[in-house]
Image (cartoon, rainbow, N blue to C red; front, top):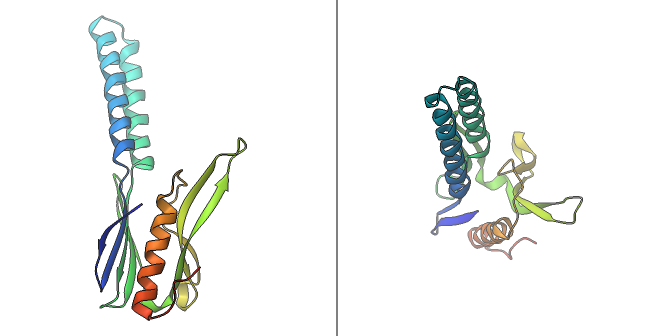
Length: 164
């Protein structure tokens, strides 16, 4: 996750999985070209594998490649999570004053590797809960940096110390 806009009234944090999209697309193209090569060589099994590769490739692109934006608009008084993938566009809006802070959720796998995701903590209104910004956990410090930037920005708008 990366802060793309940081002004007095607007903060935008974005997650664009470009490397995943490029990697999956390259893999799909390589496998599809191998299948087409089999078809041209007269092997009809290449057609079956081409359909399978195209189907699973489209499914993986739809599931794993999703752009997420978290927009804090202090002037208009809302926070919005926007998600776009091959299936379409979704957005979820909350009142600005209901957002308490941003945190990271951490997960450790069986081999000791840690992954994280950004979470918004909302304590007022009809959407009281911890709201994950992304559905997947990722390695690295992007979520922690984004949470720190969000908390500092919220503290500056509210005139208090940054939330823990």
